[in-house]
Image (cartoon, rainbow, N blue to C red; front, side, top):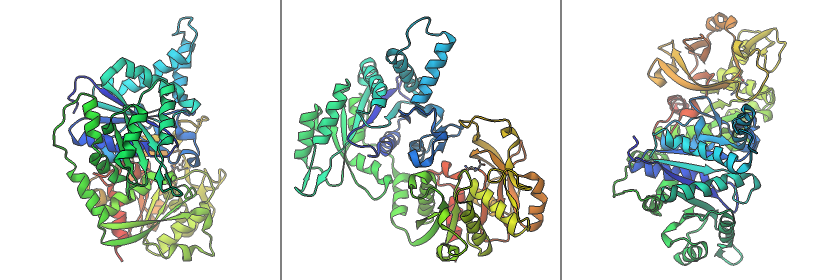
Length: 537
Ligand code: GLN
């Protein structure tokens, strides 16, 4: 619940290198502020020209995260939701492509009335409008805006310029946190601050004086080094904060609490604070996470496994589910193209449970189908997510229903047995961007004795989708007769959203993405039940 009359804005920029963890820093600070009673949201501005990451190959920026309202967004939004336990929306992710798209469409409508349309003020005004939207809706005391990329990049200049203007307009109601790297030179045994000094100079050149510096480091940063950074970068010593390597990202809020980052932020924004901060649920999660009583091996079979970020939400959902079961989940990252009929038993037989990941296109399909077969025939818990469900359906058709050429029309458009087929409403679509079945849909669980029903412990659920193909209803009865049962149905369209094999220990395929809804405080029931059943010998 919002309690401040005016929203405060915090900007998080990054310097020196990318991948320092701006998203985790923003999420951790937000968690602390939330735990002190403020309502907080986090927004990501991505400087690339794609309108959204939906059309990007996961090798580029990792997983595409989908919000309740069906926005295809940057994976950092997944962290925001997992930390804050609150849904984000399209407004929480803005790209340069989206900014230009709206400015150009206004220009075509004649909205600029003969003016020359320029980066300043038109692009920057649009950026500022998108930053302020979240505050103006009246729901948030504090909006944290993470600027993607690294300061000094050409493409992030309009964003930094917008931050400069907003700081000027908002005065003490806005502040900038700059995250940099303090590398350790083994040869001299020293932590070096020069890259941070240069990065701050770069920001100053662009007109922005950071208010707080967060220094990523592998080693503890001594006071003398902090004083040096403070002196060279025009900030007080309290505003130099270290962010040291930790074993889990979920420790970062506690590290930031130790460094009093939240207090420094609140002081600078002129907001009240006291000793009260409620992190009890967070801490009990961490206790469970760090004190597992068992270990299990879960296979994650997909075609992008070289880049773990491509399956970020699945990996995190397994962390949450592991903690809930007091067990450590070891993810075995298995490339679907590496699995063949000669080696699959060797690869899969050491696993306690198997997930076949979402995906697009035919690469790696053979390995995925072999995997589903192995799990089905050997009573190994199986969770098929989106394409992973479709794979299980194809495998069942081929090896149980004995329809040898059954396939998805995505993989073989002319298959005589399209057990997975393009959804009716997808048939006329030619554009790729933003045109899938996206976002949250209701699903009714129609089999009360199913594992799925026991896991959710309710009959109506809402889950997020991102796909074009579906279970082909023409085959429904054949599947039911042979023991693969549709247990979850879309009440409006009757689409099959969940299948299960009741004769199996735990074999579930879901057309949606449960991983997007798993958070630290609300581990997803399907992942929790999947891990629980994988623990049972
Ligand atoms: N390619 C499949 C479809 O579009 C599955 C998509 C997914 O796994 N997200 O239906």
